[in-house]
Amino acid sequence: MKLSIISPVFNEADNLRELFSSLIKILTPLGYDWELVFVDDGSTDQSLPIMREFLNEEKYAVQIIEFRRNFGQTAAIAAGIEYAKGDIIILLDADLQNDPADIPLLLKKMDEGFDVVSGWRKNRKDNFFLRTIPSKIANNLISGVTGLKLHDYGCTLKAYRREFLGMFRLYGEMHRFIPVYAAASGAKVAEVVVNHRPRKNGKSNYGLDRTIKVILDLFTVKFLMSYSAKPMRLFGGVGLGLMVLSTALLLFLAVRKIILTTSVMESPLFVISVLMFILGFISILLGMIAELLIRTYYETQGKSTYAIRAIAKSEPED
Image (cartoon, rainbow, N blue to C red):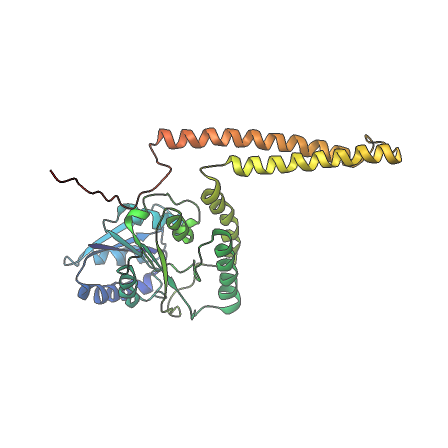
């Protein structure tokens, strides 16, 4: 079994040497083949020259992926996963707030048969009002919408079996939803409490706006999880709902006309009901188009609509 430790890096020059030495100290006694993959996400400090020093350590397998500019943490993680060679992928931040000493804990949990092990920063060392509270809100919202109950989606320190990372691609700010995608692909997900350390050097690249991005990305995740293979259920359901509501409004206007002799055409409800009926019909048409696109997507790329964990067979005796 080979481990790939992937660390996205953006302006972490003051932390990288300590991170490297800590990883070497923790990984060497484990007995696994392993590699370190650092992804420089357009750093403007001395991060890249420092990482290049690690290549001189010929005893260790080190990869450095250099971006042309800053593309964001999700892109850095996606690149690291693509170029990593390990059967198990472990992600951790380069700011030393994730503790490399927790890596054996993740691996021990995977040995129990889990495919994804997520770190839970139970005792966070961040600003309570700007980081901890927004994070709790986002985590509860994600768990409620996706159905996957994790306490800490934002913790980068996670371990994955590679087979479950090849079933989807990452875009935008979607790296925190990797456990959701993996679970949707059939992965067994567990969570362990990990150490979280205060930042010693540099400044955080995260702000309150990250919570807003998470909420917006959640709409995409929910659609991809629940409706990507059956979009008509979403578009058709909305369309039928609008058409039923429109019909009810028209019936109400008709009854009111008969009883109170009130003009139907002069009521704003008439215009609203007609628009709702038209929008409902358009929504159903969009659902039909989405169904065609989904079928084209699966068939042209040779993708399957299911995922098999294993096949067991018995062979008849001669």
